[in-house]
Amino acid sequence: MPDKLKEQGAIPVTKVQRAAKFFSTGAKVGGNYMKHYAKKMVNPSMDKEELHLNNATDIYKSLSELKGSALKVAQMMSMDKNLLPRAYQDKFTMAQYSAPPLSYPLVVKTFQKYFGKTPEQMFDTFTRSAVNAASIGQVHKATKDGKELAVKIQYPGVADSVSSDLKLVRPFALRLLNMNERELDHYMAEVEEKLLEETDYILEVQRSREISEECGHIPNLKFPKYYDEFSSERIITMDWIEGKHIKEWMDTNPTQKAKNKIGQALWDFYHHQVHNLKQVHADPHPGNFIVQEGDQLGIIDFGCVKVIPEDFYQGYFALIKKELLINEDELNQIFYDLEFISDKDTDVEKAYFKGVFKEMISLLGKPFHVEKFDFADNQFFEQIFQLGDRISNDKMFRKSRQARGSRHGLYVNRTYFGIYNLLNQLEAEVDTTKPEWLK
Image (cartoon, rainbow, N blue to C red; front, side, top):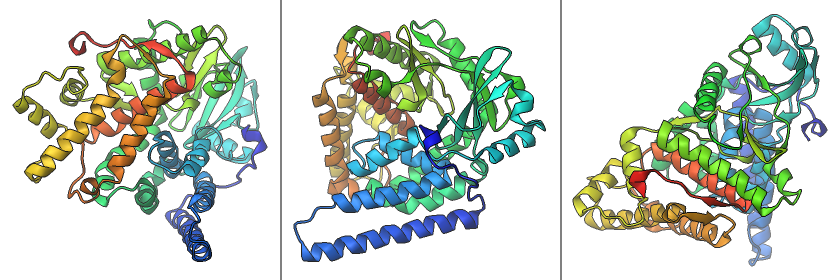
């Protein structure tokens, strides 16, 4: 639990302080590489496991003290399990649940800035220690007039440091993600836009209400109520949702029927958002979902929402159809529109990239090609990871003179990878509903 972690009395907030932290971490990572190569000279058969573990530990420690965008990027990378060595995945996954929390005096300072009052003056009770601390903010439990409430407080300086943090995290991302610079820069603008939105708590409350109301008819889903009088640009107050995170719930050994029920609620929630609302809760990591008694799924965070443009939606899902009955001209147009190929490509490059993306989208589309899909099937995930490995190490990709894929695909792909991973953790078999035109 976060209260077992040492609390932080301050966060580096100025550009100079944050840059100094990044550079000192970079020096540690450089030192780890030097130690690794020195040991390898003595023992040529040594693998990189110890190097990865040392780097992951040093980078995570630094990012968790900085919090904000840098830690959020680490969290995103831990979800894309085929991108990182296991040591990074395991360490960065902690960003989803347990960054070191802020000390109470800093929490009080934030309340006084936005409400002119302390938490004790606003609530009947308020926990001095955070009950959960993640990348952008931490949560305290409060009560008011008999209601149990969750109060989310954004870390100081997070909103102001998004752009500069992403520039500083760039060298780590290039090395860890095995991307070329063109690809990384292509996506960074989208990441920056989403992270800035995540720091806007007024927007989050608005979107939380909108999507909760639109999805209120879906069975076995629970959404908290939000309280404007106790919320501001940097503080959100909502109903406390009692229950267990998915991993904790799975440790209670639930029945297959219960796992399928939670899995179906998750699938139906995302189906309705993607295909009907064309905007989606694009942060499906385990920390954002709580399983309640009676096998109900609570949704507790709408900070990251991706609006899906209609033209992107039509092209992307046209490729997911089981029988790709599209003539060559139409298919080429879709590949151009989705930025998988361009006029800069040679005929050989066009043929190669079309083949790769057909294979990738066909694999991601597998659950759509059947009435029911068993997400406990680890072989399916192994195929995804193997394809990811093959692509990231392929010379054609590494030497590509341009980024591949529309920036809109970044969060849509991430959303589907995230849902699939959650359903795999749940070992759920679900009815894979799809819109009529996709059947």
